[in-house]
Image 1 (cartoon, helix red, strand yellow):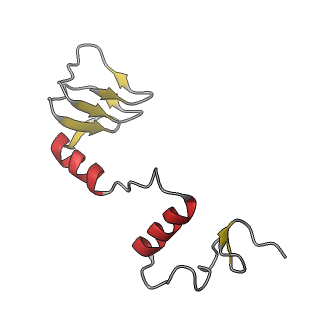
Image 2 (cartoon, rainbow, N blue to C red; image 1 turned 90 degrees about the vertical axis):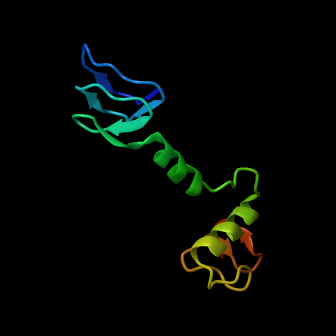
Image 3 (cartoon, rainbow, N blue to C red; image 1 turned 90 degrees about the horizontal axis):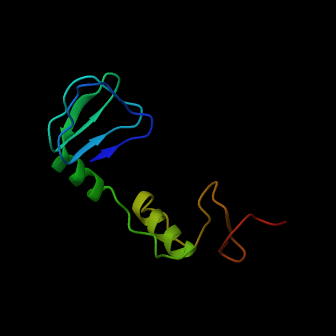
Length: 106
């Protein structure tokens, strides 16, 4: 069970097993097991298995990548038409002269 920050649970309310209650929710009615609930007043949004599928499919495992590897990964994922290393992405913080991360120095 995970109860979000600032959640208010009214007296007499029962919360089932394996439940996620969103931050700031006001729980006024019983919450069944294996679901995600949020809102004021809290309502069941989805079954926990649907929530887990969404979380795991949207997850990008980039924690162990270097800054350059992360940049390349995200550019390929979100802007596949741009070839990394040839041109700086518009508005990016890559210095084209050295092709390193960081502010452009003039």
